[in-house]
Image 1 (cartoon, rainbow, N blue to C red):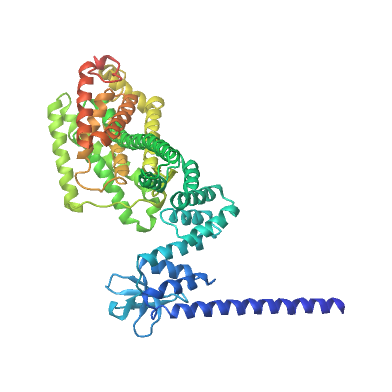
Image 2 (image 1 turned 135 degrees about the horizontal axis):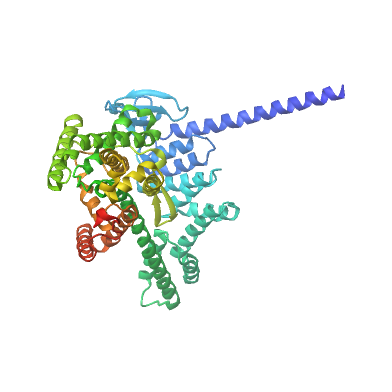
Length: 542
């Protein structure tokens, strides 16, 4: 009996707790609804106080409301004064969502709604309130973004909240950013001793806001109130930041140069094989890249729901399409022009024009855009002024994978043995029953297929158009000649070197002058070493 009475008592207590929680939630919802209903009738000069009250509630909808108000998406219906989120649609109307219940209200004309107005002061207040809401979020990334939002111009209320939260923050990255915000505020609003302490704390910090605040404080030091210690500390800190920025700018340009070199590597590596084995100057090589890029575009248009996997599907497809076209060109034209380099050059140039016009006829002359998968967007942030974009990082890694895979094929497979034999001594290879004509066809197809893969890569860096390959064909020949005809290691070194030199010279000399300097240097180098960095060996090279 006693046990039954205890269970009944616990049951009644739990019911009363649930009822109390429901009452609290209803009170919260009622307060929030009442405040939201006041928005349409509130004048702009009294809006700040109302926004403070809305932010002070515990309603889950308050963040959406404040964010929509900040972005200019918060409206109210003229007829009923109901507050809604309005998003413009394709029919020149607005799709409405009820802010209180998150329900779809359908579409209306613009004449039926009116925007809730804000000004710069209110927008700054809303940013601070949103940051304060996010500062206590469970997700550390949301907290970190909230602190970053406060870096530029935090309000006093946000500073007070940060001073309390920095002591209990567990994540070191968020705590470090909070300390930076507080130090910047101390640098701008503190007394000379506090400014000196903040300067020493922020010394070496690469946030742009930190450098700007230090420069403002240095300019504010007047001759009437000299503070040599603070002036020296500010000068040293700014100098250290500038030195670090110079180093990271160099590393960033080097990274861009390596990414450009990776594209040149993919564009030139197929040309190096065909030129080395067959001695053919293929002026249609750029169009093989174009075909690979258009293959990527066609796959994305054919499978619009598989954008995340489109590049993985496009790589083998582009290799097959460009490779087959390359085999057809070799079997249909080039094999009849062996030993006649001028005619071969003119014939491949004509083929390039035919392919360009064919693409214009099928896809139109307009450029096409290829969407980037989600996993290739964004960047890896090393520090506030230096980050590595994922698309370029993946391109570098992918180019090296293709290079080493091709190297293994040429060194370890029977096809590679035949290719190397034909490239070094065609007559001797034929005397050993190697079908040099089929080796030529397969080699040309392999080189064209790799060019198609290069087109997949280029589709992520630029728009896809009929003239896509023309921008890279000259650079591809330069890479092949500079590295040594038919030498893969030479192609790797030459591509990365030319890409890096170009990007390192561009900031100080501009892209045009940088290209001229690289070209002149390459001409002078070839005069000294006509066979390139790694000349081809064998009797055929003599």
